[in-house]
Length: 130
Image (cartoon, rainbow, N blue to C red; front, side, top):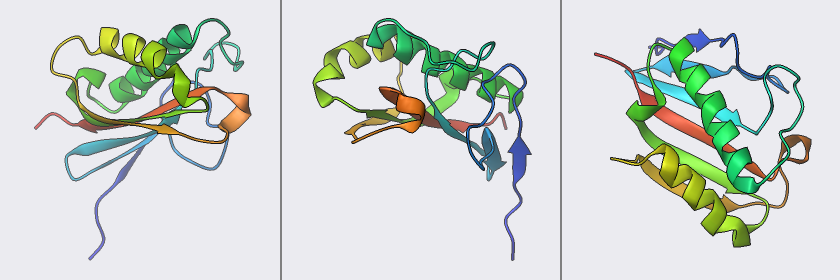
């Protein structure tokens, strides 16, 4: 038995930098690929504070969610990857401002490197409307 799945391509989100989809919908959930802080208009990494970069990741994820028929406010789980775990407070502040009420479950993981030299990447699992 194969599971039904639908590939989501999000106009307005940065182009994929590898062989993956922006998201895949299956089983009432939208599984969003990780977003680094790319400016969707230029395809370049956003420079500025880590808080601004975190916000760009979340804004990119919001575009992907909209293309999938939901919103990032319906996220049930997010994972944040950072190349410097000591940036936890700055990332946490930007993330907390985005999810001011009823935030999803979350992990924050320190990693050695991220695509394109990014300092932060965020992925999400988001509930789809019934």
